[in-house]
Length: 630
Image 1 (cartoon, helix red, strand yellow):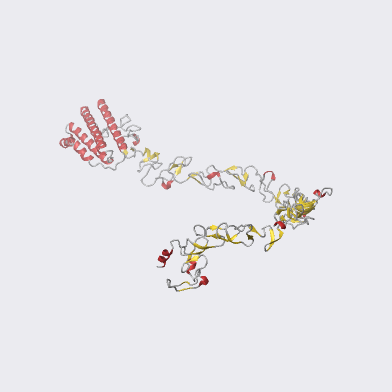
Image 2 (cartoon, rainbow, N blue to C red):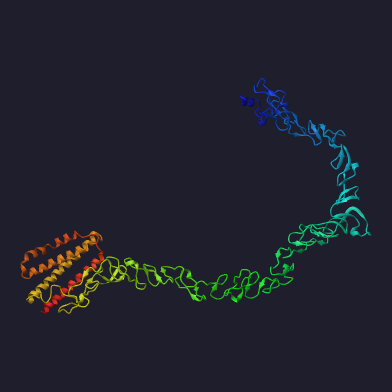
């Protein structure tokens, strides 16, 4: 309800929050219940500048009293009049205390008045240049004279005060009345037109200075205060001052004992006798305290000595016996030495004279100075001198890895041969093969030489029992030293052909040999065809090695039996062998269906198979030659 009534009174009302408490804006702070406001209204009206029943609202601008509308003033504060908008924003003339318009004062200010029909109070009784007593000018302020004209006249420029244009009572700093240059033959002037000497700020004559600029003293300010004065001022007559730290003397120009320098900020050498040295140079005036201390400033030691009192000998490895006087650190070391005291060997060297080289494999080429042992090794080297490979490595640079199957991971530094043998199930000098049949390895995973009696990439095939010393080549199984018996060829014949097993007639032998040749041809063709089918159909799946050998042996046996059938039905087994011959393909298919996909590499198996075929062909040739000779 209260806010609605305020809006109805004036849309321009501005509420002063302080007036809402304790009748603050009511005259005499008296308020109480009224016809409209039960909580109280101002009974004597509002103080200046406020309006309304409770005097909460401020009048606009410079209104002293305002009617019901806050934007219309009835009385203005002094110096303003209502103006065309009745808002008291119009100012009176400067001489008016109150006015009805800009040019009509209703009351003049205290020192202003109207004259000659004026209405805006333009005239004053006592100007600002006067020292007044009420409305009367008693004297002039500095810089003006002639009180009869209200001090309207100005003194000469260098005067502080004057009684006329030619007579100054007091001069500004730096000027004086009297004779120029104190020369009495010249005219005397009292208008402060003479200037004091340079560096003088206040004088009574050219040669009499009362105050010098900071840092100067003397009757004509021609002397400089000591740099040792605590401030820049000193007594104008004597130059005496209070001394700054480290300075002494009446004029503070000397340094205290033990100090030197323009500001006495430097210490005399501790080697100076009595601590006394020249202020400018620092030279010791009474010499040095002991004979081992030398130099004009007594801050050097005699050759080979250092320390505060130069009573300690230099380190022995300092070059030319030159070192820092205080710390004893060498300025330069002899060859092969380094360090502040030249007590360490240069990087990469060791020994009593630091002339021995650290081992190449020491990390950072740094080793122990006394023993030459490496602190740590680079790469895969170990040992006090980093000459041994880490376990599991070998080679001149220890970059090659031993076989992972070496026992204890130890192998020969130069060859890589496993020194402690192989882990279980592995063989070869480098433990390259998972079997017991390898003697010498080509690499860590490839055998180069099988045990006697074995051949193949995995040494899982046996040499012919007719090979001399049971030795055959690794890849093909060819007898290296030839065959046992009466055969001179380097390949052995079919194992079934021996002196004891020779046929009774040559014709029978020829027939047998031809049958073997026929059987071998059939076996080779069937086997090669089978391999091609396996490659194409199973996309590289590996055949079971043992299964292939069994199939091959079964096929070979079947062919052999078929040949025997051709030779007069030997031993009465013609029907059975004949049946097996005609079912070779069926047997091959049955065997191939059991091929194990987890076999060894196909290339290795093919190599072994081709070697077997080559061996059979060679044996067939040998048998044929044998038959012809017989």
